[in-house]
Image (cartoon, rainbow, N blue to C red; front, side):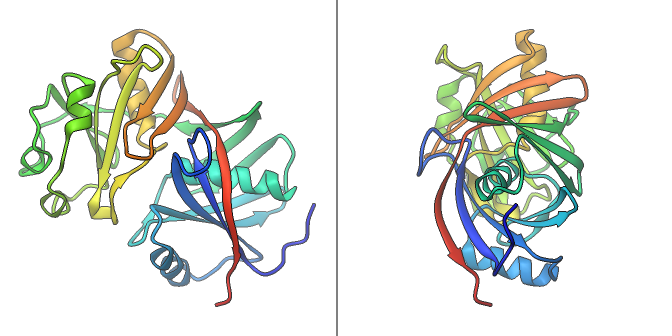
Length: 265
């Protein structure tokens, strides 16, 4: 195991097909727990959708995630990025356990993929809050409430790709974010989605693992299959392999480090 030195920031593209695709996350491995205000300032300074901070707990790890404006309770792509960084540094071999606000999350290597086990998020069909549908500029098939987000089903993939939200109006909705989703028109994928979270400091997230904790059971029921392939149709694109396992969701993707730099403050 390597010895931790000065905090190093690692920029990692997660749920990606190669560098400069998927969702970029910054990952910082710390010697000791840090002040949350300092971590929030770092996340704001960097401006990525998520910055992850890791602290060793024996053979396991404490993990926290920050958007540029708030700390969040669950993040998929920054967890995948964190596992990638720890394996790259030699801090683990095959499996990892992270202690988070959402409980213990595990990651395992699966060839070129990193496979994560996350809690399933239940959905309840819901009346959308005032102004949300107008802010999205859509005609929904159905609207559902998840733990932190709303999920909006649309007729087809073309409608998902065409959504152009009014982010200023959407920012007023008191919710972490909104997924819009439909069946994929590409036989290589089962469904597509996009995720908007301007109230959390991220207008459109490129690839959102945590949102798929709700999207997976939603589409598993409709498509009558537990193993799914998903494409997040953001400009950078996100690729996820998913499996519904009772009250857990397996999310798998690839990660690529594109930059490393030393923190000086």
